[in-house]
Image 1: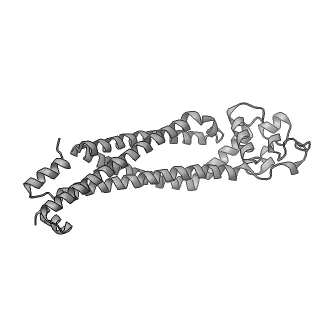
Image 2: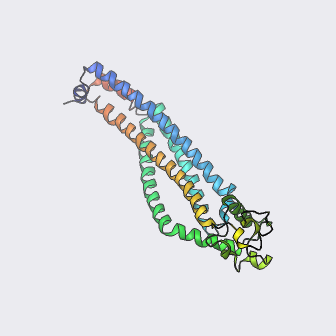
Length: 282
């Protein structure tokens, strides 16, 4: 049975009506592919900007984590690389749908497939590493930076500035054990104080330096991890959304190629019409 006959049975109409429906389906899917590729391009641009921000603009914000900064630095390059790839893939898919070029369609299909598989494997590995090593690494490096590099509220170095911001923003003190974390630290040794004044609930209180009960009882570890998890949730949701867009674009391309191509096999006039619309070999 020829492709057109199978499609006539599928659509339940005559040859001309069947081809009209196929053309309408193709144009809708072609427009949808263009929209999805536009979303991929914008998502790639967003990842590129975010990676640049992590690399260049937030360098002081992540140095508080000590050596963990190196991992975030590598992650910034991954974001920028993925952003560039998504921009190129989105542009390729848009041009493929716009120009109806079979070579570009094939390139787009295989590239998106590889990117999707890479994301799935990468996310799986990242979650495994984050679950078993991420929290431990953040705990060790952040506490070390607090004890060895924090100089006090008046200091202007990157680590002290970030710690002052964290303590003030989250209204916490220390990292895990409040004022205990400042014992034998560089800050305590240099100033002779048990904790910085910004740890107090009422920073203008006369008892701020001498009385422990005026200090914020909560440590910063839980709140800091909460902020990190919130950001990773947003990033993870964005990546999942991009994966959904990629799957939809792959499905649309498959339907365009398989269904529309199948429906034109064995019919010269219809084949010329649909191949001119869909599979133009350039």
